[in-house]
Image (cartoon, rainbow, N blue to C red; front, side):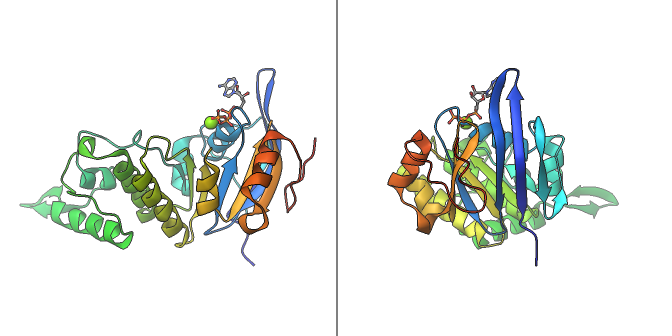
Length: 258
Ligand SMILES: Nc1ncnc2c1ncn2[C@@H]1O[C@H](COP(=O)(O)OP(=O)(O)OP(=O)(O)O)[C@@H](O)[C@H]1O
Ligand SMILES: [Mg+2]
């Protein structure tokens, strides 16, 4: 009955003479994790930027929750519930976790008739949100600069969920993280998805894609070379789709053989 969370229809993007995307179509449902795979220069980041309002497509159509949607800016996408989570780019490092969580949405109370920040209530809300997500941060009053990349990512993702985010995009989220932090990050992605949020993750690491994703979408030279449920494919088959050795893409939007 309900429409998919996001539908992409024939998205094209030219950078001058370069055709970075040559007609991308696929969709993602609520609570679904899609791993976007493809070689360097395949068009993954371009696609993610188009979805999250950082770039306008040259042509094509997007439907978000069943309605035509094209964010004109990252802020507009964010307001609609679509956000790219970066490891640390969008947190303010010189203030604490609570301040980052509530940035622009602070809770105030009146003291002698003057509105002041209600630090205690905000801290309790952040603590609850992080505890629900199973995220442990040593101190909510620590400035973010003292936290690790994985912890920053956790805060961002939790903040996104807390404020009603619907679709989160992660472009190589674990590139700078260690083994244990990556494992926690992957768990967190599943946890986020279990709340009905759609997740698109770009990764070059096949093992991560197979660990976390419900579906694998392979982009090759600006087209969808494969769109398959994880259970219907294998790392070997996906490598072949990435390199173009076979064009075995099947499924709703796949199989655009060149
Ligand atoms: N701002 C730009 N101006 C011109 N060409 C661009 C620009 N950004 C990307 N491209 C080109 O578009 C194509 C797709 O690039 P994109 O960054 O989307 O690839 P990618 O799949 O994210 O690659 P990687 O895995 O290396 O991050 C490449 O040929 C790239 O050179
Ligand atoms: Mg990229």
